[in-house]
View 1 (cartoon, rainbow, N blue to C red):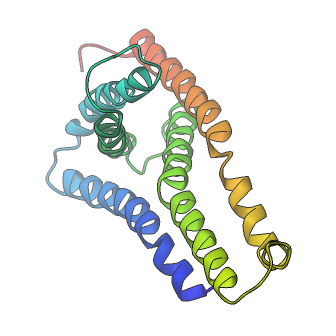
View 2: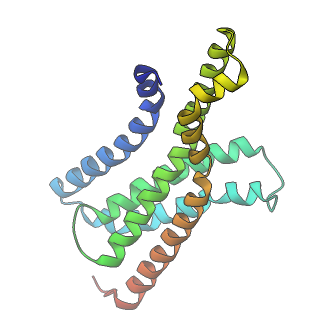
Length: 193
């Protein structure tokens, strides 16, 4: 596989993820520098709300919601989940306060990453594989020869096509750990703070 093409293909994925992490650190730093760290506590509520709304895409995909275009719902899912994840990460900050909160944040990050794999890497690698097949066919290679030459690339793409089998359970784990964290907060939060 052409490495410069591959790097170009993963660039949006890396940019999407690194901007999430860098913005989290920058916002956390600014909030602490300006004695506004109380905002962190409430950004988790808004972030969770945005993530929950983003699941309208799943409802549209399953035809529970019947209006609107699925592509619009998918785009909404991506941006709301990213923004909600940013707010939840700001909520968590770079502090080590509790195992359950960190487990929820980690599960959320893995869910975001697996979703981005589906969006960026799978589409680009499929396009690259198809372009390579086309190039080899134009060179006059038989289907059998093409299959031999692209075997490993094809295997990698087929493996990546199963990303939803990873994305869904991780999202469920995130939902469970987030729910436990929220329940824990309601049980033990000193409301007089």
